[in-house]
Image (cartoon, protein in one colour):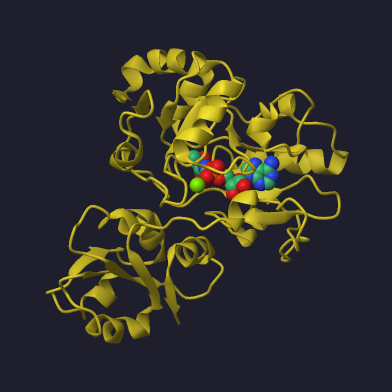
Length: 337
Ligand code: TXA
Ligand code: MG
């Protein structure tokens, strides 16, 4: 049985983690599948339970703005200052910093054998307590089966892992709904966004004046280990055909599908033009609510035996919508602009 833990028995959850058990935890972005990062067997189990390819490194979650210092190798003074400022301004929060890892700190199962580690301090008081009580950072990939949409509620976690992990730390649905922005600070030649997330380039640059984030994507050679290995796999896909389409085409597209087998997920203004015979999922009134609800929308019809197609709104190509578009374009089987 997978036990639901609360603030009252958080110490028991920490003991389970110390023993090498897996406990899912809430963050402001999505739920993470936690294991203590210094127990190789426990970390291996995270990959196993998720069905995750082992060359895809895990994010290490820390409980304070300073803890990163213990785990990283020497970097230039300038970089060190930037990391300090980023941690000070944007942690706790949806930013993962990839930094050179100090030798011997984490075994290769955590880092995927890379010489860097992704560190993040999540913005969730219970989870910060859990990490502190455990006494060592926790790895935390999103708590979903590999390839499925990330979980934003305890129910989503239970849907994928009930009976397969020791517990879940209970919490309300996550506040943001897409994962952290992963930035690479380990390359002396430049700072790069490896995975778009809640924080955009503009938000990061305005939080820390003087930081310049390259607008280039890292071009990877065929034989090179991908910089954010997770980005090469198909992701976030529910068991449905997903058609991602920009708002002006939605009503027309819907008419070509049967209401028996098709559901529609869109912002409210778009849904108001759809025949009520179709099952609908509201993405709320704007891009923020749509981003918050995206993964829930992708999972909403998973257990319906009738619905086989989901038509879902593709938000316009702006900087703010990057995380939403990145996730949806990976989930979609068909993209119509
Ligand atoms: O918001 C989040 O980041 C959530 C919550 C639970 O914290 N976690 C999450 O973890 O999304 P995960 O494992 O699903 O995604 C981690 C991403 C992957 O794309 C991975 O390849 C990349 O970060 N990553 C981790 N360590 C890295 C490293 N050392 N170098 C490059 N990329 C790394
Ligand atoms: Mg994930």
